[in-house]
Image (cartoon, rainbow, N blue to C red; front, side, top):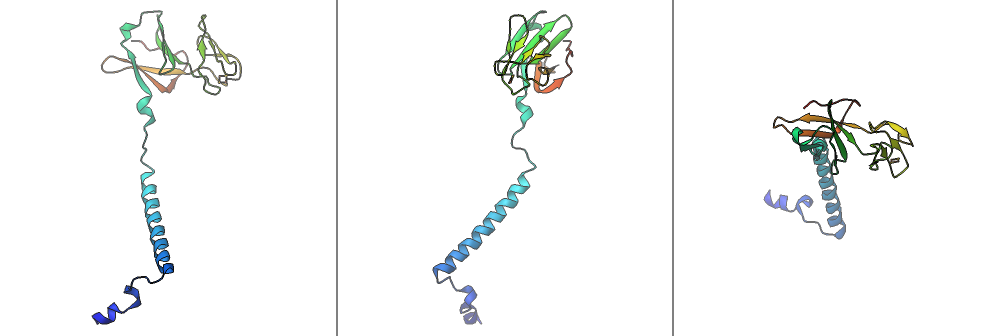
Length: 161
Ligand code: FES
């Protein structure tokens, strides 16, 4: 019986180059299939959490006096404090994403295609389809003023802090 098994064609090593390449192709196909299945199971798990970088501490509210207008280059936003509270305007142009420059009179001008925005971010001219985004502000449990650049609030919304 043992002898019969050893002499079976099935258990003999491949003899020809063609047999070897055939086995190699079969194992490669199996390995590719297994990797594809593993990849498909991994798809629902995000490897990047976009919100983790969208929140930024801007400082303690008392750091900003009434009338303060502060630019945060990394977050690309202007923080304003007036008698009614805090608000933040994104300086990212709503046309194609260039950074709109704030002019001396408080209005904004985009250097790329010439969009103009008033001091509240409303479109005054140019190709921009909508006004500058008012960014959500909140106060953290530790008392920090926090901006979330991925969250938009209705223009005119102020944070009392
Ligand atoms: S990107 Fe600002 S006007 Fe085009």
